[in-house]
Length: 165
Image 1 (cartoon, rainbow, N blue to C red):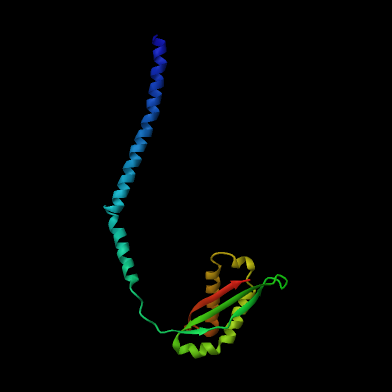
Image 2 (image 1 turned 180 degrees about the vertical axis):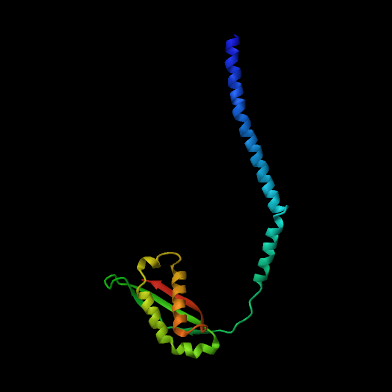
């Protein structure tokens, strides 16, 4: 009988030996999680996060009014891909301009349309289907317009129509 009791006691010791590290790890993980939560909400790190929220509040103030003039551009109709594909891109835009330069930019509008037409003709159809394509195209077109018109004259390019058909 002593022989039979011995295997059970070693099995119980093995189970207890496996269970103890697991329980210790679980208790330490819970303590670390609780300590981290306390540190971020009430402890030394709480000041960092409340300060960041206070820093965002001045950004909510309305910006000072800056006078602008919008110069409308003619609608561009650009063939996409090969001529046989029959797909076109229709783009209508306006330029946000400093009022002092509105007449100069209006005079340069044929050159602006030319540079936009040249750029849009090389854009692939696949690029237009990406979700971020309009942002990327708008940034590229604005940069080209600023090069043509001169620095400081055009503040922004506002796309009012962008249709692929």
